[in-house]
Image (cartoon, rainbow, N blue to C red; front, side, top):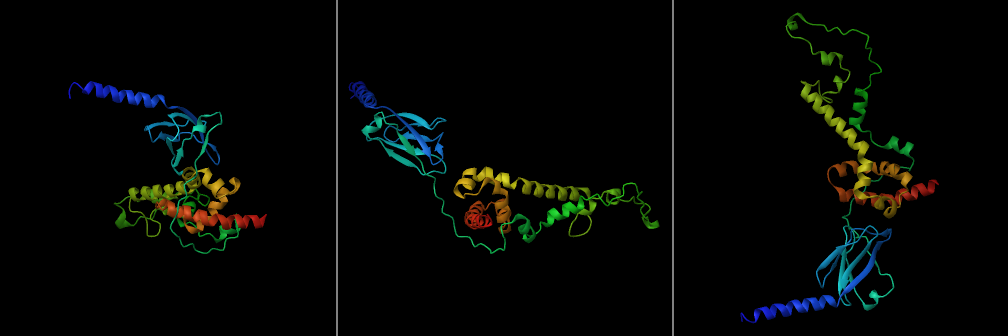
Length: 272
């Protein structure tokens, strides 16, 4: 058995080399409905060898007739491509990948009386209390900075210096909104930081949504005109998509956008 081992190994290696010699390079291009697709993973299921498409969606791989190529990309259906003898001819091989359809659970949508006009709809949209409080707190128009500040100090309280921040800072009334005055600078700064964070989220929400879902989702699948993108989000805002997104309910946000896009497109078409 020991004497036969080198011959057996040599025989196996010879078979593998022979099998590879029967294969030759197959050239192809991978596309979707918008054009060529880079970085698609391609693997020959028979040889277990793989590669990726280049920036133009092109790739080459060793194969022979009856081999199967598996092509996969995130968000697209996996395509098992069966190789035939004519794929090695002069005809260009084009392989198409289709977008994966995501089935979502049903979501109950509340009725609204929006008309599609941004000016009119904003009047019906519930006001953001935090934003309104912040706006009023930062209004310096009624402050007379030339007027000196004098605090009435009771004889009993002479030993304690007044809190001059509360006396002079026009934003101090913002601290402790909904229940008295803030008891210390830490609580005040935390409240102000939280409000700034909320405002920053609202300002960046459209850009975050476009970055995460992609322009293909809004402008190709939902067919929303690019110039109407912000108006469409405002149209859907009464259904609390910002709150759902912040709480991680991404699928519900997608479901709302998909269902509301039909009504929105119908409204703007009637307006035109």
